[in-house]
Amino acid sequence: MAKPGLVTVRVRGIYATALSVLLHEKGFLLSDVTEIVRSRLGIPASTSPPNVTVKSLEEDPDRVLVIGYPWDAGLEVLNTLVESLAFVALRSGPLGINTVVDARSIGDCKLELPGGVIGELDSKECPPKDSMVRATVVRESLEPQARPLLREGVRLVGDYTIVSHPGSGVSFSEHVRDPTLRAELLATLEGRIDTSLFHVRFRSSSKMESVSRIVAEAEELASRARELWDKGPGKEPVIVSRGEYIALVYVSSRAKELLDSYRSKVAPTVKHHHSLKASGREESGLVDFVEEALKNKHCVDEAGTSILYHVSSRLGRVSIEQRYPDGSRISLGPFSLESRSVLGGHLRLELKRVFRTRGEYDGLGVEKNPGDVGKTTVSTGSWSVTHEYYTSDGRLLGVYVNINTPPEIGFKGIRYLDLYIDVVKRPGEKAEIIDADKLEESYREGLVTRKLYEKALEEAERAARRISSEYP
Image (cartoon, rainbow, N blue to C red; front, side, top):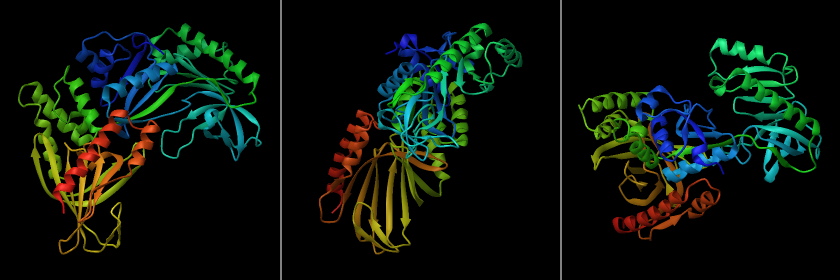
C-alpha cells in the first residue's frame, strides 16, 4: 500500500478547498493546485505529477470521483476520505479503468472477466464463444445495472502518457492547451513511435515535465504494450496489467457538514456551505455573496440558515429526490408546501399531498383511495422523513418513517440518501421496522460505510419508539 506522504493528489470542484485541507492534514502531497486553494492553504504545491485526482462531478455535485494510478494510490486516497467523512456511500470499480485483462467470450460480445464479472466488448465483430481475448477496460460499472465496457487491445498508463496498441494517432488532454508545448511534443515523438500502430495520449500532467522525459515514457509504454499484445491471451480470465483505480463517493449532508468544518479552517464558511453549493448555481451565488459579507465581518456564519429559509420560500410545489447507495434514484411528489420554520439552525418543512388514484401505501399494505391526504415532515437536522396518511375525513391510515441522511434543500427541491431501512405503524398496531435486510445487503456489498450502517439501525430503533408513543 502506498504511503500517504508519497502520494500526490489533484483536487477540483466545489469541495476543492475542504478536501485539500483534509488531504494535506492526512499527509498527502497536493499537486497542480489552483491559485485560490494555494493562497488559502499557504503551502507550496508538489511539482510531481498527481497520482490521484479527486473532483466533484459537474452533472451531479453530490458525488465525488476518485481516480488514480497506481492502483494502490487511488485506494489509499479513497480509504482516507471514507474514514474521515464517515457518512458516505460509495461505488468502486472492481477492475478499474485502463486495466488490461484476458477474458473469455460467452457470446453476443459479452465477456467473462476476472472474478466472475461480466463485461461487454465494444466491437463490430463478436469473438467466437469460448475463445479468449486480450482487452482493456475503457468504462467501469459504477452506475446501476451497468457493465464494464472493454475494447480489444492493450492500453497502458504512465505518469504523463497513455499508450494504446493496436491504435493510431496522437491526442492531448484538454488541459494541455499550450500550442508551443503541443508542437514540441509532436516533433519529439515523430520517428520514435510509429503512430500508425500506436495511439499516444498526452495526459494533463504533461505540462509538468520536460518533453524528452515525457516522450521517453511513451516509448517505454509502447514497447511494453507491443510485448503484451504479441504474447496473446492465456487460457483463463486474469488481470494482465492493472490500470487506474476508480470510485464514486456520494457525499451526504452530514459528510458535507464535516467538509464545512475543514474549509472553515482557511476561509470564511457559512453553515450549510457545501450543501447549498451542491444544490445549484443560484444557491452557490447566494453563498458567495454571504461569505464575502462574512469575510468583511458584515454577517455571521449562521447566515447559511437564512439562505436555506430564503430558498424554501421559493419552493411552492416541491418534489423529493430519493437517492440510493447503489446509485439509483426515484422522485416523490409533487407536494405543496404548507409551512416552514427554523429551529436550532435547521429548517423544518411541512408538506402535503392529495392523492388522485387508487393503490396501496408501500410498506403499510393499506388501501389508498382518491381524496386521501399525505402529510410529510422534513427537517434538515433529522435522519428521517415522516409520512402520515389520512382518509379524506381525517382518519389516520398509517405512518411511514423513511430512514435517510439529513435532507438537503435547494431551489430544485429536497434530496437525501435513502438508507433502505424504514419504520411503519398502522393504527392499533406496534411499530415495525422493515427492509433491514436491504440495508444489511448494501453494507455487505460495501455500498455504505459501517458508520452509516450503524446510524441507520440506530435511527430506525429511535423512530420506532417515537411513533409508538406519538400515534395510536
